[in-house]
Length: 281
Image 1 (tube, rainbow, N blue to C red):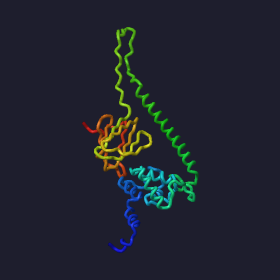
Image 2 (image 1 turned 180 degrees about the vertical axis):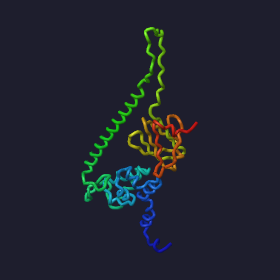
Image 3 (image 1 turned 90 degrees about the horizontal axis):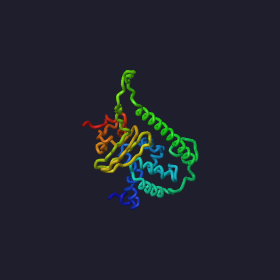
Image 4 (image 1 turned 90 degrees about the vertical axis):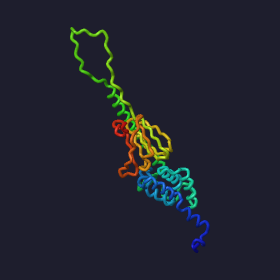
């Protein structure tokens, strides 16, 4: 044992041993394992990249403080598949060790600028209210557009096909009974997709039509049912492509494995041409 090791206190040795297991280090490892950059996390969570860098460095003094720190840590953990409750507990321990009180709002810092950099200072409550209003307007617009498109598509499908029937003259005797005109088969409406994780857990991001995307872990042998009107997007790690089994409208589909230079592989399923993804019988 060298002199430097023998002179160190037990607390110093414990701190050195746990440096690589701090919350920031664990979140960084989880992010790297998912092949995600800080820019990817920032795009997903709308949290400034400098705040994400501070979290990975366990430097909470450079965050807005209080409840905003909890929100940032929880969103970061969720985006990399880290247990959110464990992340909050680790944050509280580290914050107290740094002399911070996790539940208090900052008193001497500049007011928090939620999710953005460089904007003019405003009350967090005003920012939240404006964000809710903007999201409500966008959601209403998207819903109206989808409703209009669906009604227009259904109206076209229900219009009967006109045929050029010969005009009966006065000398033509009408048949005693008329046979009903056969109707064309109705095409299948929407997409019914089943996703199964084969033998291992798979992190999966889904997006149905124009709705916001959702993230989650599909546990081993778990099956997830999804229904869409026009489009369905599945995103997953390239290394997990072979662990997924996808069925579209009751038929097995090929799961893409090419990420095309992106951090995640995207399987885009559309109502019009999903047949290109189906396995040949």
